[in-house]
Length: 77
Image (tube, rainbow, N blue to C red; front, side, top):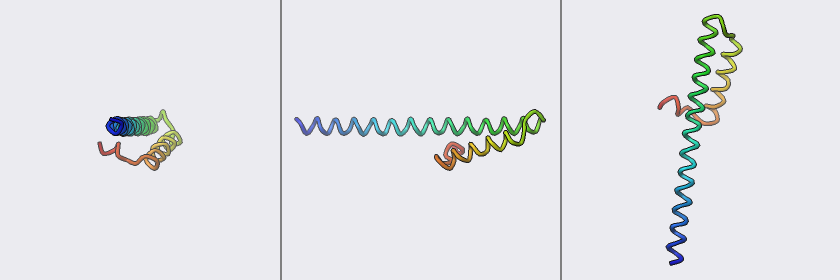
């Protein structure tokens, strides 16, 4: 009986770890999408004359930092 409980506990912990990993991936994906939207908005504002090249560059830098840390998977999905 003890072996069964140990295996069940191990499976439950494995499932929790996989669930947490998936949640983290979804959050990173959402954050990447938000950064991409901010870049688009900054570029649009710059082109319309109400934004600055500095704001566009800062948004680009933030997006590139996110891609360096988490990959560019959010761009493909």
